[in-house]
Length: 349
Image 1 (cartoon, rainbow, N blue to C red):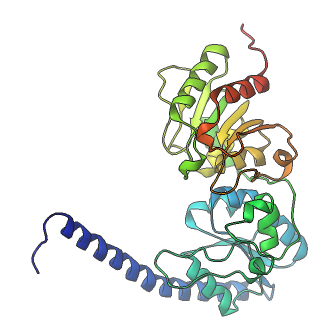
Image 2 (tube, helix red, strand yellow):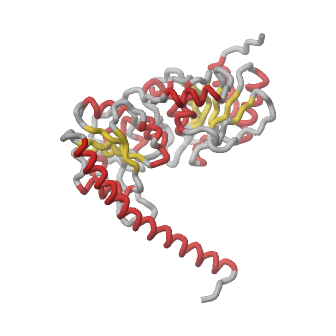
Image 3 (spheres, rainbow, N blue to C red):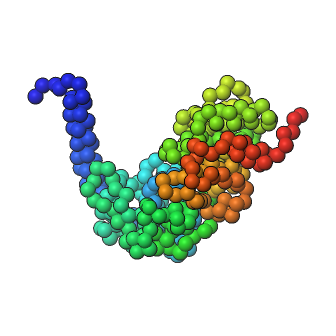
């Protein structure tokens, strides 16, 4: 077969690239499942008869941070158990240092997760996932019977309450409402201190993994310029890629330079966090940081609140939502006014 020109060749290459990745993934899943099953068997032997308990919430960042109280609740229920958190590789840091966990297991995909659950290797499972979030390569459709029994779906989950409240019920636990916490070890704090960032900055996070949660870049640039012109506080932008492009010594971008716990440590030291509905907003809640958060209509969810604890009680936070409109249509003046109210009158030296 010869090379095909133009769009036909592109389609041909795309198809076979997908097939290669699919079959490589499926083959790798068999190997990964077998190795993890053996690893968990050995773990149970080393645990000396302690029951093996799995908390399963492998993604997303904000979901895992919000559901941190689950680990504390499960430890109270199983004080003598060997408790692990099943997580995707990108989010290991969020559970690695939790004092109520004995370890973690890296999940390859939802299909592998279901194989391990059905194998009976776990003595008790708390599966926080909602049914039908499939792997893009595997044919299996992951099911959580507990979530199905209470009618929890991706179409209604935000109508049920905050992330912790509804995910804990999906796992068969009571509806939890506790404060989330972050566990940041001393070496991480030392690395952040070595960056010598300004003390008590305003920290901003401007871009999420979903465009429906974002606020326009021109608004962020305008807000940062106003902050620099009006207040003495420096502004530090976190995230993967900078949205603000201002040439001023009071603006600092650490985008793409920090891991998850380092990001949380920067937020923890902030005078004020201003951000969209995303993982760093959950870090701010868990770290006790005063915040202004920008929300908007997300699919069919209009009046929703992802946060438990202090943010749910309205303590130390201003949550802005132009109900029925996406975050992109949140008026700039609303955000500026909310930030000004949190910062108070400018104090010039």
